[in-house]
Image 1 (cartoon, rainbow, N blue to C red):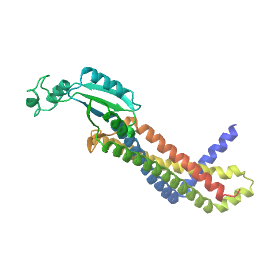
Image 2 (image 1 turned 180 degrees about the vertical axis):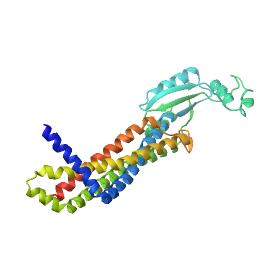
Image 3 (image 1 turned 30 degrees about the horizontal axis):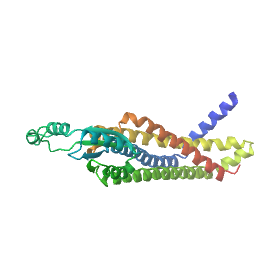
Image 4 (image 1 turned 30 degrees about the vertical axis):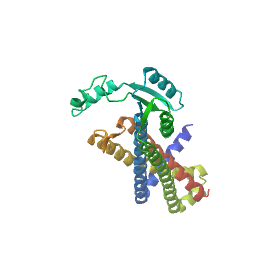
Length: 300
């Protein structure tokens, strides 16, 4: 057992030595890995925030159902029952025209003097239901179904805009995923190429090790660990830049981007996961890249 641990530590040490011996090549590889992982980190941050923004939109999307002026209390209650039978309904909230008048008076100093002239009898506003849906992609179909119901004057929900926003962010999420996968593949090939060059530069040393009876695993493992080390070192700078860059962006903008409608994910909810993801990507991709190179170019 102790002998196996000693061999493993020796192989890891040889991996570090190999990185040092090929310093300029290692720096170039680490730099390229770092650049790739920075782009991956930015893509991950973008993906987190796009998901949050999409969720925020879906939570805030509401169908406003204006009820006919002459609808009785029985009609209003019956309308709620009919709306509740639809498949895509999450919640229904009733607002009387008097509640709306008081709310608008509080929120707008300009409207307050005008609305204060009305009472419950003369109030020109319509009673309404605020309907939240489960699936925003089906909101248009749900709104059309409600529009056809008795006692409904009109239905509003931001026709067209909601569906387009959901589609746009869905496309952004898919593009981000493709970018991340593509960059990871590029990183793996980059590390594989680095290990290939290292193997080529050490052909004579490998031949000597064969002649003295070194096992295949003893010859291969240092190259394997070299890839892991390159991936690990290449992930440090991206983790630092992405974390501190995102904290700076969040603090400078007070947690919002461009407008209060677009709020950013809090750093404490994303940065630990981001750091672990980048570190794992660096190490795993380094291992895969070195494994491919050793398997293909080191014939032992």
